[in-house]
Image 1 (cartoon, rainbow, N blue to C red):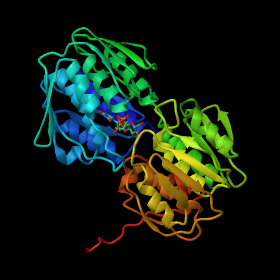
Image 2 (image 1 turned 180 degrees about the horizontal axis):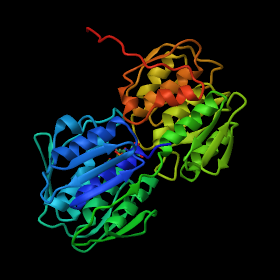
Image 3 (image 1 turned 90 degrees about the horizontal axis):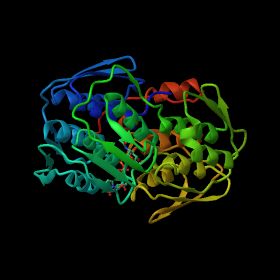
Length: 406
Ligand code: UD1
């Protein structure tokens, strides 16, 4: 199990807060890390990748602009907004496009930074935030947004005075970011709770070595794969405590989950029973595992209701899954999945990272061959996906197809 994509990208952005060299370990070898490396290079940093590591050298004087050509490829680039305004007094970040999963506004980021004294404008496709020095303030979020919590944390650590973030997100990746910021010299109370108290400091120091928290979504993907294929998978370095509800759902579906010295093991010896799932911010069922559990229900015995509360339009992949014969109906936030004894392979397309991974899992149990197109999305979040599945006994190949002339 590698470090979490959703953590390492923010740790890389947070490194901007201190001049000098920060080294991160347990860094996954995925496309998004390359994109974030390029974002940082264009800001003036030197970024060196080693096997599982990234060393970021941050100069005294930083650039403050993140261009559209990178931000549109990876929405998480928005994480440089908070650190840049805190460190440079100004940030100009292109408005992201990102995954095709709902509207994903930035209003909480903007409202929060404004409360900390920044002026934020949007102009010609860019978000521009300015503040000579941010000042701490109480901020509350209408929804515990992961990205907004992170940007406000990274802005608050160098602000003058105290920032409290109420209704903060408390995903394990936020805890990892808080711990990293504390290693840099930040003062943060309430880590892991929904009220974060940040006492601003004058300056932060780089971190010699910080290990990225393991990726719970990748771990969860292999766990679901084990259940769907009626297999036996040991998820090394997987932290079961970060997947409590998700693993509990797999047990309800009929799986056996055992904690091991260094990870957990998931076994399944029969067709899964359908399970209802409601996505919610952590510690609720993660929205990023919703496509996988939907795919699982597509081959389960019985009917399941899936409720998506985090992203409004995360059903795009349902059309693709239907091409494999899945029986799914969606209405607003809900999807009703009637399990079928079998799916049938067909060509399908990945619209985002998680949908892509879920389609691969569906392909593993579909009769015949499933061809998943646009797998570059999967490369954004899964290191060696094909090799790992092959090691587990799956028949998966990566193929380059000739470019579509139309
Ligand atoms: C992060 C994760 C993503 C995960 C999501 C929820 C990264 C790189 N991505 O995305 O994989 O699915 O958390 O766990 O870490 N919202 C607003 N206004 C805002 C901010 C958010 O309305 O200013 C809404 C979004 O449209 C969405 C919801 O809040 O409906 C959750 O978004 P958020 O938690 O911010 O997700 P991200 O940080 O984008």
